[in-house]
Structures are given as C-alpha cells and as structure tokens.
Length: 211
Image 1 (cartoon, rainbow, N blue to C red):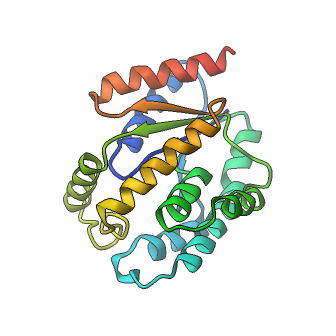
Image 2 (spheres, one colour):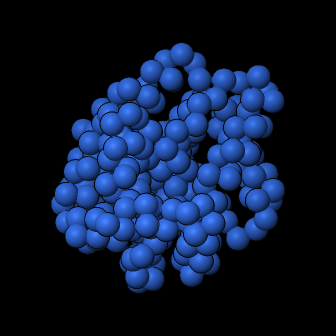
C-alpha cells in the first residue's frame, strides 16, 4: 500500500508518519518511510538545491523540473521496488505538492502540472493521501522553529521564507485538490494534539486497508 502525506509547512507530516509507522509495525506489517524531495541518492542532491536559501534565484520553471526529476528517480528506484516486495510505503510529500506549490503557489498551469506528474510517476499513484490541514500562520511558526532548533534555517528554509500569501495559496490549492479527488485525498485537521491526529490517521488507513 502506498500512502502519502501532504500539507503546508509545519503541519506535522513527519510526526504523523512516524506514529503511523509504529502502529503498522506493531501489526506485523513491513513499512518503508521515504520523502520528497530527497528519497533517492540523486534526490538527496536535488533536495540540497531545492530547499537551500542560497538558491532563492531558482526560477519557477527550473524548480518544477528539478522536482519532477526527483520524483521520477524516487518512483523508479525507491517507491516501486518497495511496493513490489509487499512493503507499506509512507511518503512525506508526492505529486500533489507540485500542483499545490508550483501551480497554486507559483501560478503555473495546474493542468500542465498534472500531465507532467503523470510522466514522472509512471502510472504509480498513492492509494491514500492524508492531507494535514492547518492555518499557515501556525504552520510557518512551527516550521521556522523546527528549522532553527535543527540548525537547518539556511539549508532547508527556502519555502519558509516565502510570503504568507504564498502559503495561503498553497493551502487553498491542497484543499481544491482534495475536493476534486475525495476518493484518494482525505483531509485531517492538524490543529489537535499529535495523538489526536494520529487516531484520525489510523482510522483512515484502517478503513482503506479493509475496504
């Protein structure tokens, strides 16, 4: 099973993925956790380029194609092979982020981005996408504090440095994607405690597993 987690900065995706992994391992399932950008060897190099504050001059078009290159490599070398072994794959961001960030955030054509994503994923789409929804004001505060505590303000702070208006557009983009694809994307309110959110996520996953 392929499950992705989406949302703006600071929604707690990595925390929820870790909690879900623990839950699924306790059930005897094999689980692999990965992320975008950076889930493959080449992707790790692309992540440094894409997220560094040193690269604020990266054009929207260049940014887009670097994300697509990361995704194509990630699917071919990491995600698909893991699924073929029977593992559950939990991924922090996937193709929906490109439509939300580069489409709604940057103003690129969402339909074009959908078509380009189709090429990058090579037919492999998640069975479930958990969209953690949060007010961007709260999310940005969390994300900036996290980067500061981990010493990643410069290395991974390029999107946190974007305007609040940008993050509001991204959030609305995610919500529009969820409205258009309710069979795959489920919205979870990310304002509660990690434990409360985890219970909702587990319920979604269990429902999908037993559907």
